[in-house]
Length: 162
Length: 276
Image (cartoon, rainbow over all chains, first blue to last red; front, side, top):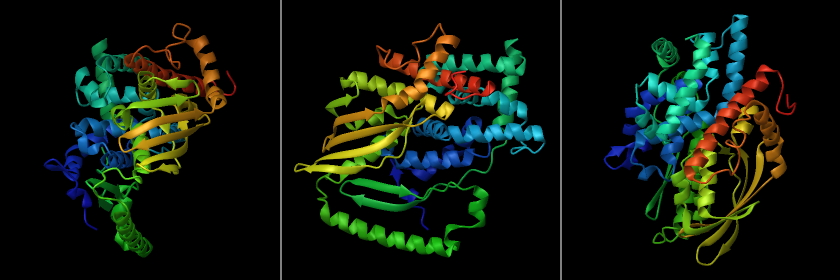
C-alpha cells in the first residue's frame, strides 16, 4: 500500500517528514502523560487526527500543534488510563506488575498530577524548556505554565519527601 | 532544598520517559479524495501495538485485503458520484454542511479554539439554554471548556433541511464530557446541537443541554468545593468570567479541582453520588 501521506505536502515538507522529525519527542511526551504502554497509540491517534484536521494545512507551528494534539488525545484516554493505572498499583502490591518498568512510587507520584501538570513537568524537566517555550508548545499562557509547575512541585514535594 | 526536590523530580521524569518504546509507524492514508480546490483525506487508524503490526501486516490478512478492495471500490464509486453531483467551481457545496460539522467536532476535541472559531461566520448567532449569547461570551465558554479538557462524543449528524443557496441545517446530537464527568466517571451530558451552515461558515449555533445531567455531577462537586476550598468556591464555576483569560484560568482550575475531587473520593472509597 502506498504511503499516501507522502503526497500530502505542507509547503515543502511532507506530513511524513514532519512526523518523523517529531515522533520521538512526541512519544516521550506521551509517556510522561499516559505511561509507556499507551504512548504509541496515543501518538498514532493524535497524529492521525491532527493531520486529518481541516486546519492542518494552515498550521505554521507543527510541533506545537502535535504536542497539543497528543495532550488532548491523552485526555480522551483519561478514564481508561486511570482504571488501568489503578489496576497496576493494585497488582504491584500483589507482586504481579502490569508495567514492571515503572516502580509503584513513580506511578503513584505521577498519578497525583493532572495531565497539564504532567505535561509541564515533562517539558520542563526532560526537555529543559523555559516557561515561555512550554506556553507556546501547549497553547497556554506563561502564567498558567508557572502555576501548573508550582502546583506539580508542591504535590511532588510531599510524595518525594524533598 | 529546592535543588534536592528538582533532582528528585528529574530522576522521576527520567524513569518515566527515559526508555521509550519503538516509535509507531507513520499512519498511512487509505483514502484520498480531491474535490474542487480542497483535499479531503482519511487515514488508516493503526492503534495496535508496533509488535502486532510487524507480526501481521494488513495485506497478509485475506479478510482485511478483501475488505480493503471492497472499500476501495466503494470509495471510487463515491468519488465519481460526488464528482458528478458537486460543482467543482463551488468550493462550498451543500454537501459540505456535514464536512463543516465534522471539522467543528474535530477542532473542538483537539482543543483548537482558533480552528473552531474560524468555522463561524463573523456575525454568527449563538443560542443555548440561557438564551442568546454574544460571540464574546460564547468564545469564553469555548475557551473554558478547552482549558478543562472537555470532550464531545462522536456526533450522529444528519442534514435536516436544505435551502437553495447552499444553506443547510445539520442536527448533531452528542454528549459532553467535561473535567468533572471525566474525573469521577459521571454521566455524559446529552446535547442537542443544531447548526445552520452557509457557504461562508456556520451561521447559527443552537445548543440545548440536559441541565439535570450537568447538576448530577456539578452539584456534589460544588458542595465539596465549599467545604474543601472555601477560599475559591467560584473560580472553577461556570460563567464567572469577564475575559477569555479569566475563562481559561477558570477552566484550568476546574480541571485541577476535578482531579483533586476524584482523588479525594477514591481515598475515601466513595463516589460522587455519596457526597462524602
